[in-house]
Length: 257
Image (tube, rainbow, N blue to C red; front, side, top):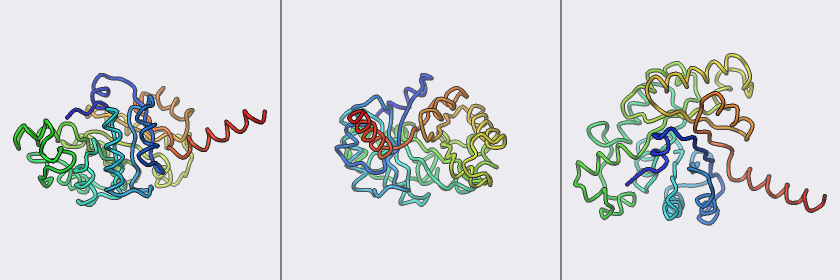
């Protein structure tokens, strides 16, 4: 098992992805065939659960593209099942404390990093995938290396402890949720406010210091370009329904022009 998106990160490449909130196997296949480097299936805000997510992951794998999942919460079953069906990485929302991150690592990483429950499930090819044939130790080592845990920094608790969280063994990267973070800071949507820009810089510095990657949600292309100029190499730009809506309106405007 190889996480092709992780390999791009390790090579220092810039990558672009999007959220999937309304998709099914057909629409996510189009995303897989595009130049997007990854998609994030959003089971926090989207209507998906484990079975539909597994089906979309299969489609992405057919095109050798990387699927991440934003889980609905940090509970054990939410983390365990999405890894078992083959997610190559998890975005974990509403992280408030170092202790919570310790639990996330325990649920999402195998021994010796964590306590993830062992099973040759769909993500292991039901025991027939190459990495499942390496024996228990080799399989667990591969999963710990290739299946990424990415806490989301969108609360004051996460921001306050971001240096500790980013440096924790078992945390692979950090995802910035600017909307909820700005709300938590008492400045909803004020992304140009000095204190918000300072928070972004602090999170990035913590990731850089720990040798971890830093992702950030971007509401549009202009926001993504600004973040890229600031050194955020992995913007997640908008989501499927926004692209669909904009494409429809653009087509109508061009037809009626």
